[in-house]
Length: 531
Image 1 (tube, rainbow, N blue to C red):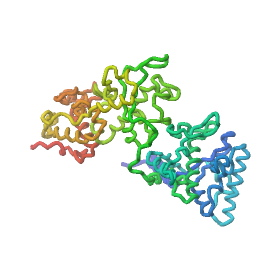
Image 2 (cartoon, rainbow, N blue to C red):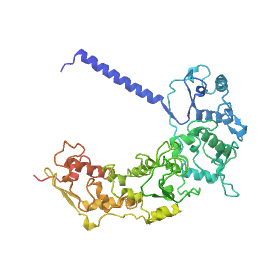
Image 3 (cartoon, one colour):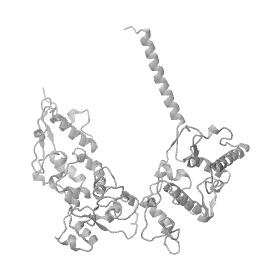
């Protein structure tokens, strides 16, 4: 076939276009650098719109340069005398007095330092051209990750803060509240909560943002410990925020329970008496909650509590919803899907673990047993216990202790040892399915799983993984009763019998990471017919 000049021209244009894209992609990969110490200097925007692009500042790069000259943080940050000599996070100033004054400080101090270093024949930053600092694209990407202050890290800080003589720590160094009348901070014992309850994303009036507060407090504490030659935490950005460095943070294997007079057991229930027009009456049974056990399941209290460690329904998630809880009512807060802080959402995420996903990934999301709700919403042990008992913690404990876990499924004699699948025996021999072995394997995989033990309240619950739309019974109907041999075009979500078997079996094997059957090996399951 002869190619015309016009076709050759078209091929050449496409080739040049693809080549250009490859070169640009290569250059982009070479230019872009991931840094965890990337700070944006855009202070002047608080006065007016920025006249030039914001400055990308590499903090650790400058810290390392200062250390080589035997200088420290005080070179750039002034001490706040009113805060026990804590260093201000602002550059060379304590307050932002005005646009021109702040601009002059940056220009004079930064450029002056660069010139001083450059005069000693050392590598230094820009000294003349504005565009060298004020760049639209600095060719950098921030790899900064927030620090997860989990139970392990909390315990390590608690131990490091203990007085050697008394073996007691001062929790007030981190945990404090603000006294509006006295206009000062104070430590409220046994009311400790997350810093985020007060320190929000942005600075509000005299309350610093979470970012500024944590950097000011944490770095100051680490620096003072280092000055006293004590083992302490990081001072540089990368020490806390670099992904690789975070993996190196020492983990305490066994963390003692944080004592804050928190309850071991809680009874969760909505208001049963209507006190005003905003309250809703709940007719659901109360939910006994093992608070102590759930503390052990999670690395941090923030797994459930967003900020305040108060009861969920006390201020935020009331039966009707409130402004503090962003109008998410108690029912929604406990049952929201896809939300880790929701009870139901957290339980469903546990279903994604391999031993659970083998069944749950093949089941309809809304598929629940009739007893599912009653697993959490338990009936009181006595008719008058709910109204008569003054001790809800005791009631919760009694209900939890009365709840029984289901171990296993039907007896072996009630489970067929093998099932012969004949529907696909045109090209291959019938498949011999080791039915009882599969059931026993699935059952053993979850025997130590408490969630499965409580929520698989019926012995036939495990059968629902394959017989997903069948009633609970020792002898559920065969797959062919729903999945016809040809595909039913009127029901696109119900595959034919061949598709149903392959989707169900192969997907289960993939989730459990079994070697066979391979995605391309039909004879792993099907024996070829002899001709």
